[in-house]
Structure formats: C-alpha cells, structure tokens
Image 1 (cartoon, one colour):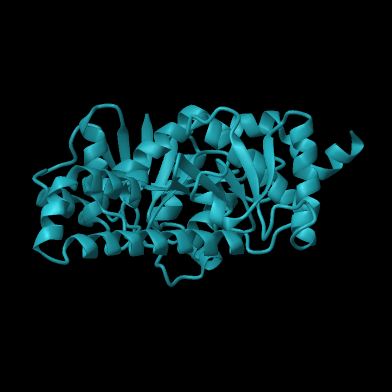
Image 2 (cartoon, helix red, strand yellow; image 1 turned 90 degrees about the vertical axis):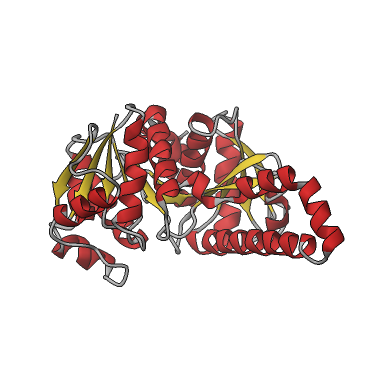
Length: 343
C-alpha cells in the first residue's frame, strides 16, 4: 500500500515526520512517498543513519510549505508547489492510496475539497476524530470543519460517521446520537429539531442506528458510538474532553506523588496506571479522518511526533481498506433531504 506523507507539515517537521514514515516502511507493508524539500528530508534521513532513502521510501520534491498562519484558500491556490498540495495532487491522481499531513487543518480540508474532491453528492467534508470512552471508542463528527450547518449536513455526517465506525472501528450497528442539551426530541434549536426528524426517519428504514439526542455527560460513559454535531459544538466538545483528560492524568500523578506511602501505592498499581495512560495517549490514534473526501486523507495533529505519524499511517491503511467513499456513493440517495422527501 502506498501512503503519501507531507514531510513538511506540523511543528516537528521534517525530522519526526520522517522518523514516523521510516517506522511504517520498516515492516515492508507500506511504500511511503515523502513530499517536501528534498534536501531537508535527506538531511533528516542522514541524522537517522540513512545516507539515502531506504527501501520503501521515496521523495517527491516540493519547494514550498503551507504555514499554519497562511490563509487556507490562498495557500492552496498560490502555493501549488507546497508539500501539501503536491501530496494532494498525487493522492487525486492515484499515485498513492491515501495521504497523511500534520499541517494546517484548514488548508488540508480546503485542499482535499478542491483537489481530491468530495464524494459526489456529499455537501461538506467533516473532521471525525476518535476519542476513548468507557466502553471503547467514540467518533465525533464534525469537530470543526463546518461551524454553520444545515440539517442535511448533519444527516450526512451521521451516515459518514456510522460507516466509518462500522468499517474502521469494528462497531456492529454503531449507535448514533445527536449532541443536544437534553434527551427529549423537541430539545435544542431548529437545527437539532429538524435533524432529529431526519435521523429518526433514516433509523426507521434501517439506514442507521439512531438512538436519539444525547447529552455531553453521557458521551464519555459510552452512551453512543458516533456523536453528530455542528463543527462549533464538536470542537468545543473535543477540546473539553482533551482538557479533562490532561487534568485527570495530572491529578492522578499528583495523588500518587504526594508522599512516601502514596509513592509505594503507585508502584503497586503502576501497570494499571500505564494502561490508563496508553488509553488516553493521542499519539496512539495518530490523527483525524476527513470523511466525505473521495480518497482517504488523514489529518495528524500539529504537534505529532514519530509515533503519532506512524499511528496516522496505520489509520490511513484502515481507511483505505474500509473504502468509505464507495459506501457513501452507493447510499448517497439516502443522505439527501429531497430524495427522502420524495419517499
């Protein structure tokens, strides 16, 4: 499988990006195409003990870089020889099976939409991060790509999230919930009320497993497998969960480091603490899938280290094997308000 990796995207580029790509290529399962400044990539390789790209790693030179401060649309249109745009073009042309980038989220979303293109009939692509919850994993869709949404957008997010949870996360008939400030069907603004009716209809005909409105407090307890929301609410939710996780791990460490007795107790439960830390580690997930794009594109977080890039490449592999774009194309009529109205 060929995975295109934007070597210049993110805070730790290119060294950590190259290191993560080498980890993936080492097993022989992946061919990695690194896009970016060839000289800088070669310098990184030499620092890691490789005088030349090893077997399974190739470089596509790109003279420009999309900076985090760049306007997303302007960057994609004007920096045509950037590592991100070169990678997206290669993805569109089928040179690689998927793309991973830790660069600007806005630019990657814009570029994926303009260059790789959305699945025909999908109104908006969505960011769908996976976070740990009590009984496994929770998919949040959308988490920031679409601040203003229509009921049809949310309907499509529900389908996209459901297919991804089923095919990538291994959830059987994933439970889809609509984020709201109460569980009653008449709760929320007109957006939630109208979306509820659409999701309920989709559930009745067996298209998705909609379980109704869900409050934020139920999510971390495993109340659903996929939570549907507009990008503004989803981003607030994601950042709150990330902050809560950081706070909890900090407090756990503080409790066990308080005195000699607690330090002894920490030694006794060290294995359990390590397991908890692993579950909360964002580097194990690696990135966020851009759902609705015709080919898999994975957004790795901006501060990605080598392990996170490696995990993002594994996530890209899973997305390729799941073939979500084909599944969406086959069911697109179920995701349109006009088509549902006619039924």
